[in-house]
Length: 235
Image 1 (tube, rainbow, N blue to C red):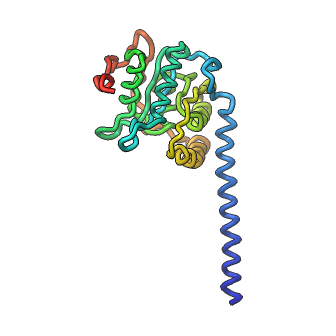
Image 2: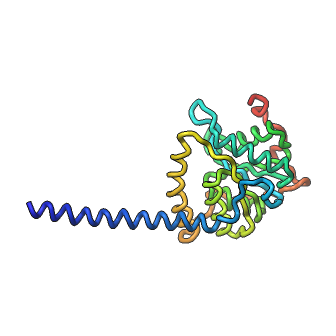
């Protein structure tokens, strides 16, 4: 009996040490992201500094049959930012990698419904993840001091990625959180997403999946898809 008990005790101790070490590493990475972005994420619109461009981070419009509240509050925040004069143009970014799934177009349609002119909204169809969206804002759209728009937990990671990728003046405007059941899942996912973000930036030097030709933003360079989107009329 002594041998099985000794074996169990030894591996229980090892399991505890491994679990504790993993928790410390995850917690440290989470804290690094928070510390980097702590003074750059604003919830009060009046306190947000003026910038030329806002970067709206993509998410799916619907979850099953239901509207995604994360999508709705990001659109609301971006529209408020534009209408208050805090930004002149918006980049809507997200995944457009398969038929029937187009985050940038959905965001643009929703913003047009909120009164944002179509020719002030630029679509980035290669924002497959936050790192791609942030770095492409600099390398493709030529922006170094954008206002990032998403929920706070997401904004902190995006601002960290921006500041560590040569965009020291990037800030964020926090959209309202969703009170749905999915909120807790998003916060849990964020722990591991921050760990990956630190690895991508500090160790791997990860770059966007696609880059491409530069896109100029301004009155003299309206977006290619500057006309209103038909789907906007149906929402």
